[in-house]
Length: 444
Image (cartoon, rainbow, N blue to C red; front, side, top):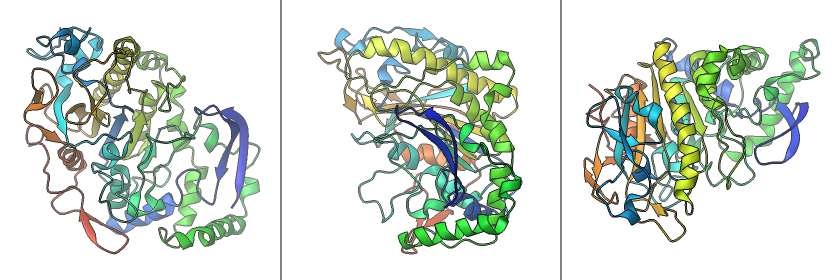
């Protein structure tokens, strides 16, 4: 495998290492591009460009302190935060989310998400399913499924990009391409991203020997074929090299090309990491918009560490204003650019938090009900879906299963969940969701 090393940098896990490009594996996406290009060619899907941006909140955000404030609950459940009015009459959310409150007509809080389990992983948010009973290879993430079904919009931009940090321990980054194989894995620009895609110290002339390049691909194939998750390479390898040498993806990752006023609207992130989750990088919200505008179909972003077993309100006072700024800037930006009908936004975590505040001033895991926030994709916004009981511990009206949200996201991408299937390693076809339909309140 040909490896091109770049300058030293420090990743979010604190380990100093060199950035690099593995041409044989095309950086971080395995053999994604050749196989995706093949899928694109065979499916004939080139014109439509719907997209999804998923903001994943590792650890499980406190639903009753964000979008479901319980003013009539006792103090040990109600907590310290007060609700504020939004620009939609009758809808109230947390006082620390004022920017989202002012644009509630563009949003849909879902207060009654069900179907979670008490496990710290992104698996359910990324796949819509539980790990128990999974088929060999595991369930594929939504980005992998869409890559398989719809392919790339153009060769130089991968259809599925994961902006989550690459960490030494990965309890919050457990999902992947599953039984679809490494060819449909997300492309992850690790570290600073931009440096990983730069041929530092290597000129294009030095890469002109295409035989040597393809030989490195062939060697990589021989090294990994035994896994059974990857088919052989073919003529699409030539287009894979086109992605490495194109500037479009590199430019999309360079958010500094944007107007400074827009960058300021998104805000400056915080690279510090609490626990073993993700830094609070507001810049990634802007990068996500740039990536879908450049051609990506699915972009996932991990933001913060929401496992508030202690100091729930102190930490939330830091996290929520940053999330408020990033999400509001993203949604407004999509509207300003006329992308709100095409780009779906989903914000959520793996479960909710306990109604009762514990002795350490925190809330513990609560898989019985949680919340989500949706926007864009042409859905009917300016409404709240579902409710919980007086204590915020159980769904009271309109429970919404994880897979209903997935069905809605697939619908927004132009995929019929009643017809589309993906095939596992044994050749068995699977529907994308288990009989669930797009949410009738959101789609026509």
